[in-house]
Image 1 (cartoon, rainbow, N blue to C red):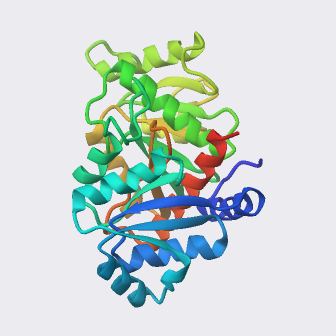
Image 2: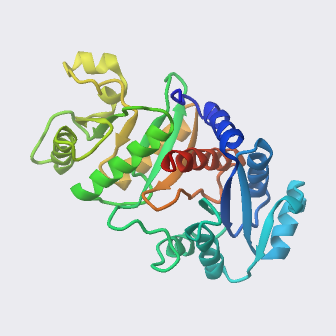
Image 3: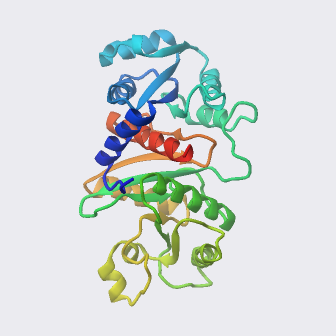
Length: 310
């Protein structure tokens, strides 16, 4: 496949998957919002995702009417208890009836509690579950993958290695054959007084020793020399990653959260996200996200599901 360089191209790729493999099935926990249902309807009409709607039947019906969506095209599971919405929704995925687990209006704690349930959840052994935001930003010709800005707060080196590998796998699902990974810090040199620079150096060496696969890792990088070839040249940094990063691994949730929000509010961009490292793709969108962001997240989950099943 060709590398997906824009999120509009991601939608076209998801449509291609739908035509070639048939639509994936999304299990939505607490699907009681008109904007969400309109996004799911757009995915269904485009042919890449059908949805099972779990939640209060009357509220789902009202939301569908508000969105102008015919529920005859959906399976609806009527459940009024929020905790059970998550459990029933995730069980559809772990049993194989659905391919993707998606958050609707359910509170995040109930959504994640179901995802991590030992009996019907989507745990994947010892692998760290992480979050990735992916962005297209005006002025750049490819998608940026940023992790982890939402799920793991202060990951240690082992967790960062898992986060990095999870994110690389998503980038590869977007057709980036060998993603270039920049491990970010405030500076581009190893400083023993800055632990994140030591982690960056260790992750670089782990990649060179084959412990982190299918990518090129280097770091530490400051943000400017990770994305600007001119900045890297000015600072004398020689690396295949310098100025060309596809994936950026942030030191902690504070840096990541501020970086992602700066991109969203200070640039012309499109942004969506996924939870990675579970046994199936997980769509964790905010209740305040636009229908477009929810549609893009579903399209990414479809691409990842297809990649994992190759």
